[in-house]
Image (cartoon, rainbow, N blue to C red; front, top):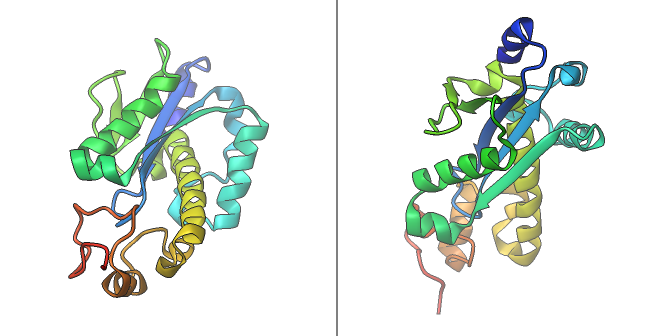
Length: 200
């Protein structure tokens, strides 16, 4: 992991990793998270890996561990309306930038999954969740936060089953859009199928 390489040279190096979730979703916000790690956190990271490779229960467990041990993290989001107005790439960069900006101090090393942020001296890592504890942890935090948001939206808009699909374009979700039209949190700038406006 990139943290091991840094700490082998300097155990005082603070490392920020950032990642986002929800880029490809048809509804809800895009969410970015950043996490700042120090060498003393190493023993807490053994089971940290890409959020997509962990069960929801395990992600929640790791998130609670982060909070219990007061590991610094920040979360940023852009709504579906912001995405429709500014585009997904701009919104993606914005949530990553804002998340990092809340934590960054001079001399921190900053790593971002795949995306290039032109500030903080940040380094873009290919397959960052597999090569950086801090990026993997950021992906877990962003995923838990956004999944919980979508569960709440599932209660408000039960016909779309957001608690199950988290806004992604499953066959069931697309069928419900066709049947009921779109709701307030759908991204109208995305390809939502033949029904793009609320019925009636």
